[in-house]
Image (tube, rainbow, N blue to C red; front, top):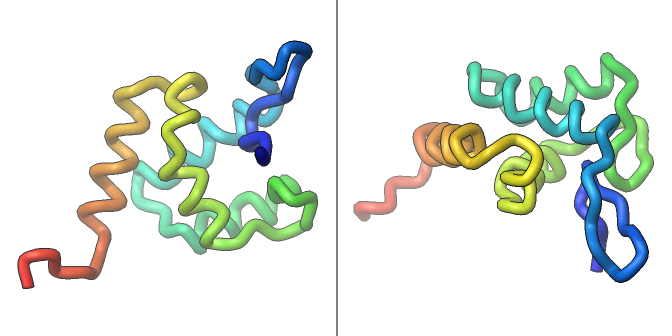
Length: 99
């Protein structure tokens, strides 16, 4: 099991919020909700020299998208902000599900 960014594994196999990374998670959701694209969020993280969850210097759009979709982050950002991000993702989707 991969430990989600923003959490650390503690004794007993429980996840605990990592405050430093949790602040980054909040920033990612905030930037996305106010209109930044996945690429812009990745560029912002690179400019702020925030390493990706795998330790690389640059985040990928896929990593940002995965983070925004993971409901484990409700514990860090709250349900309302998580749902706002899901609404944004749905509104920005270029797939017409009615066809």
